[in-house]
Length: 283
View 1 (cartoon, one colour):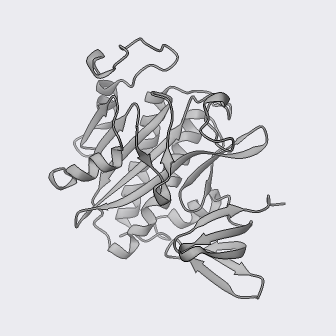
View 2 (cartoon, one colour):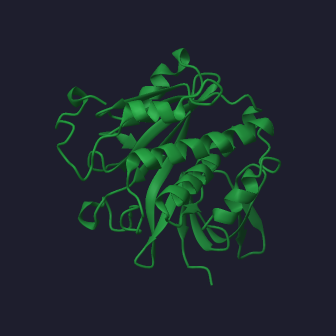
């Protein structure tokens, strides 16, 4: 990234230097690999919206990274804000050659890939809150440090966005229950290192999933997500569309990636979309 792309100049914040786009391209773009292009912009409204708008003219494997987002969105169009260069704000374009009914696994695949990549590169124990939150432990408390949003882009594409709080200090957190890699005791908050690790991990998981024709069992994805999911085994409240509430124990993940909740009446319900609240810590 050149100084002209950074409104404050390349060295305006030595604690939060800009990403090194040329080095990232050298480390990630390979003729036989998933990643085909990588662009870094100083600021944008939403990397997901920008990449989706261009998806029709791009091959699979395009990466868009922003140093700052002014209109980032999470699930249910919730805002996601953070200071410039304090996190990783990235979207990728994939065009999965697998049955469309298995595309619902992509957010879960991304969660596994990001958690795996960050655990290796940041040295932080990560867990997943179904369906798309990344959790760390700060002062003995579960905190959300990242989120994932997947959206269809045209007939054959999916744009997957991920926002990760990297170097946010306690006084910079958007809400008290949020966290960051820094606050979780990360051994590294170098965003170049972390982003490379996340994208390499995603490529490995995605390629394995595609080789298995999107089968979550054969690819190992279902087992990996289940092992890393903090929601399973917990008593939860699920806020469903239409203002309906479901309460019970999250007992398993089915073959479609839905969370299965055992209710007090003795039945079970598979939930494809909903807002999960963890009601108790597992024993």
